[in-house]
Image (cartoon, rainbow, N blue to C red; front, side, top):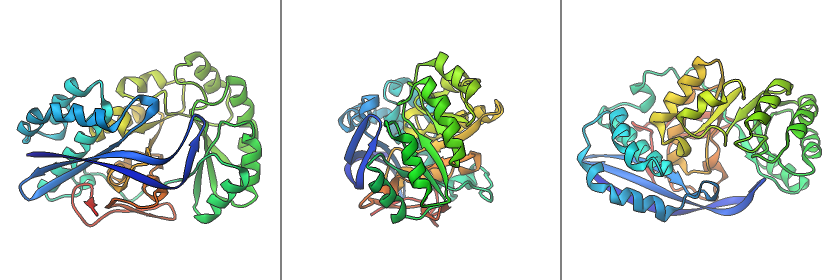
Length: 336
């Protein structure tokens, strides 16, 4: 088995702004695992909030190259267990290699990944489309540029309620809002009252990640469901989020890939929590991997590839929120 690392700069269609940052380019790392006629693909993006860079991921994976290539005949679960002790300080790199290995393993078996997992794709949730923070006029323009059944609206400004009121004038679509740690407890409880009237389905991560007393108060008092994101990074966080959030948004890059994401989602479901997977503006490599988890989800945010000016891969496609799988086996990805 051969390890190949390919860094890319993904150009976005629009400047993407959340409560703590803005960017026009998303650096990403594509990992290829080649084994004879089969190739598996994985991806992880850089992220300043989590102190992850492309050079760091490449260095961490190159150091492990002999170890990676000699463990080519394991199940994905056993492969993850082998990699974790060496990459637990770089879960993004672990995600990329785990995703590539899952893809490769399913291609060797001649199956799509969801088929290998024996998942029923007949009731998959629709994906939302994200509108980043901008002027209200520009946010309306972005929404009208791509009519969609569900929008996730990034908030964390002094005009949050006015933004939603104005956007609501232009669509009957479902709204979800994500404050990315930008609100206080009082703001969240008060905003929830107004947002519910405006057809908002849930609020994602309103408070700072470690404000557990605040999360508990919001959980008890909010009239809208609260979904954890920054507070739910790895497997141990699911239980911590129980009775502090109504659901969890699992990000593959944060938890170490598909193998650990599956365990987190199953645990959340066993605790009666809502389940969601989100993306980090990946190309179709990362987005196509998410598609195979859809049968485990109540909600999904996998619009990363359609936020790009130009994709670097083909795979799962999105139309009107509906995910269509590639005809290829594994995660269904092919690099352009």
